[in-house]
Amino acid sequence: MNITHKFVEFIPEEIEEGVLYISVQYCTAIHKCVCGCGNEVVTPFSPTDWELTFNGKTVSLSPSIGNWGFECKSHYFITRNKIQYARRWKNWEIDDGRKEDKKNKRKYFKKKKK
Image 1 (tube, helix red, strand yellow):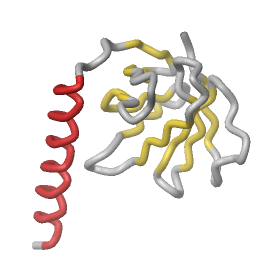
Image 2 (cartoon, one colour):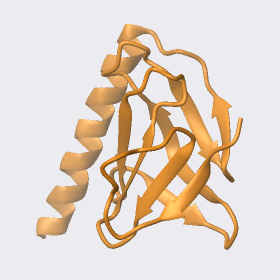
Image 3 (cartoon, helix red, strand yellow):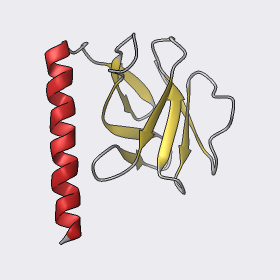
């Protein structure tokens, strides 16, 4: 499955399925969950969140997208405009991942204060 991308200044009110909207100015991207549930997935760009790679033709987001807060709990990668599904995480893995994210954010922002 593929996803297209559009560079925009502002995120449009109507989000189309299969399109990753990217606002470099506001360091964020948004798309509809690729499982078809209709939820909007926001991926902020920062050293502690997602990284966007644009090779002149395609885009990639890293790390994977885990929609743990949605009922679908979908998990996938966006790599060179292709959706690569990943396995569904167990609840304990989601909890551990959230704890790790919080720890990494604290560590990063603590360093930044110095």
